[in-house]
Length: 410
Image: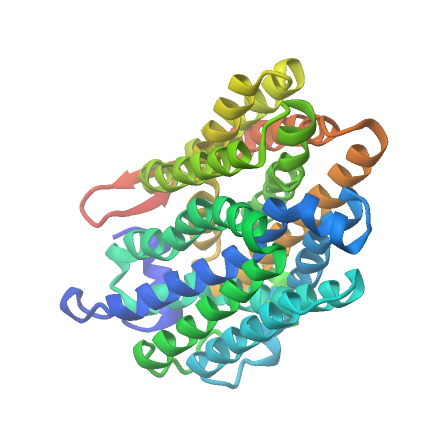
């Protein structure tokens, strides 16, 4: 058994035996991820419709992504501290209730301010849920099944990338952009019911505090992981948030074609999650480097030949596939870097993710408004190249332990 996985057990208590693995509860976490990421991704597929209806620029509408990200960046490390005495099942159910409220408010928003308020609620739910997802998965299955459990949870990301963007664009075209948030509210209510039935009592264990978070930030492996996240994920979201203006205004794709390409993006992401998980189980460094290098090249392809419908369609599809390596790669990296404080480290990781999303949305939005739709891929190419280079140089070197399915750092 690896030293890192031994520390996981010391932190969380003895893991369940294989026959006691709570896969239904793990699946309910995956459903929660699906509902959250669906709501998070919707503005990217509806950006043009939202900006037209609310009479704001594309860059202004893109700040609905920024609002969610900034709030989630604060909520991710803060909520484990504020709720450390509460059963995690109760906390997760409360966060899902916030998700329902956010979608209902978004569906009825009559102004950008109201829509931003809805996205603030989503940010609280998103940050809190992600900060605890890996730590709770660790408690629901034996340690040698942790990577598999995280793949199940992160499948929610993949399914959301398949469904959210194309269905959002399709429904928005038929019934208006508000209908997509109404559908997301129904999905959130279903998620709440499933989690209520499936999740066992989960008393708090890590008891993170500000001193613990400070100690985590002093660990070199944690710091490198967080910087890599900010660079790589800001690059991705600069490109993804504003991909619809690229498809409509540069490649001149119709609404139907945009929906089809976004569906291909989602299918690519679904496949990429499993391929990325397979690579990350052996080396999270390689998973992130491979995904980052691919997206940097694809962003450059959009800059060079984005006016070609074929090039844009292929680039967006492969972009989805490459992104699939990041969630499981970074989650594995941070848990192995701080197995004794998985919940606190998870909060810092989510905060870094959300800072990156906000950075990408703001930076991409400024470039889109000032230089045109291709400003976003330019931002993506630069940030992704820097993050990939940092991960290649300073990321974890892992030697797989075939006996346990775990890993130990060289």
